[in-house]
Image 1 (tube, rainbow, N blue to C red):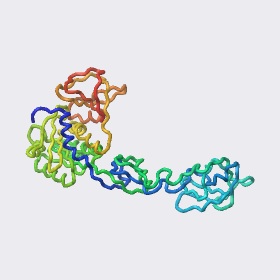
Image 2: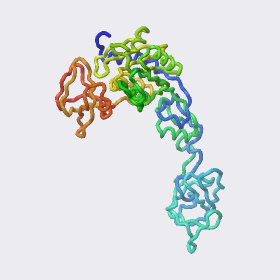
Image 3: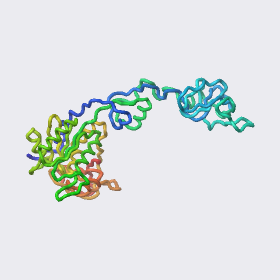
Image 4: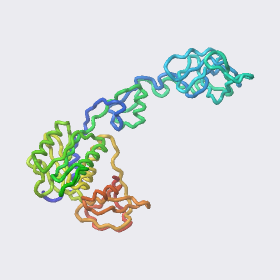
Amino acid sequence: MGERIPVDEHARFVRSLLSGLGARPTEPVPVAAALDRITASPVESPIDLPPFRNSQMDGFAVRAADIADVPVELPIAGEVAAGPGVPQPLAPGTAVRIMTGAPLPDGADAVVPVEDTETGAPGNDTVHVGGAAGAVRILRPRRAGEYVREAGSDLEAGADVLPAGLRLAPRHLAAAAASGLTELLVRERVRVAVVSTGSELVPPGAELRPGEIPDANGVALAAAVRSTGAVVVHEARVRDDVDRLRAELDAARDAGAELVLTSGGISKGAYEVVRELIEPLGGWVGSVAMQPGGPQATAAYRGMPVIGFPGNPVSAQLSFELFVAPTLRAIAGLPQARTAQLELAAPLVSVGGRRQFLRGRRAGDGRVEVVGGPGSHLVAALAASDVLIVVPEAVETLDAGAVVDTVEL
């Protein structure tokens, strides 16, 4: 196992091991399924946006020259609703009732909002819409182009509606759909396998026999992978059996995994199946100068990087966040975890020689307080936390009010 290696050194090695994942191939996906994906190339709109001249308001389509002097009364020549079809051209000296989004008749160059009109001629309280009968009184003049959406005024056909390298949000999908696109070419997501090891593990919800515990790591690591923009292609829970572990890694590769994350099986005792499998293959199993999460492992199995985390749930989750999540977020175009310097609400004691990652919670006064202890099994304390408090290796005590680095969970 050797002496403990520095945290930053191990982080650099893991980053180099995962460097081959960065050059992503592309794949087409339906627009409706493209949320949070990254565009592989610029996306052109095949149509004008909007695709035809249409009304911005409910009101009356007119010729601006006919309403230069107001009030003026125009006969209503018909009605145009939003929907398929081509309206009849507008004759000079007439108006057409029009709805928002409806195509503008040829000859019309302005829309008068309904609130700037009166639908009734003197002595006639009823206006008959649909034919030449009835009239509308225009109370306010409008210039040519007012309340008219010209074809291509938002974007012309052939122009880029989305750039390359964009993380797709709902507003981007709306623009793609409005352009009539059904698919987008995006970068493939990193394909990850998650394997929990330990004969004591059972599925969450199973009846616990003496010595058994629910498998929290499988659930947590798979969720963490998805939260960083990657996809889980294989999940497994393995007893302390090297042959079974080997079979699951083979299954992960057959499922297309590019990266395998394991939890457990890397300590110094017996039944450490990950260590037993990867050390003969040239893998590294050792200790990093951090708490929690000291035991760590790295290897390559049939061309797949294997990153081994400790079996304690807090250690496994923090190890993923520190060593793997930054690379996966960068590939997926996601922002990195936010950091901040905060004042301690109370004094703390740390272990010298190791970088301590204490679970913390921001208090209402802007300071941060420690939640629970340093133990790597305190999953409830981790769940109640919103930051990690980072205590450097050379620091053993800190007073209340001391400024500490924190990483948002």
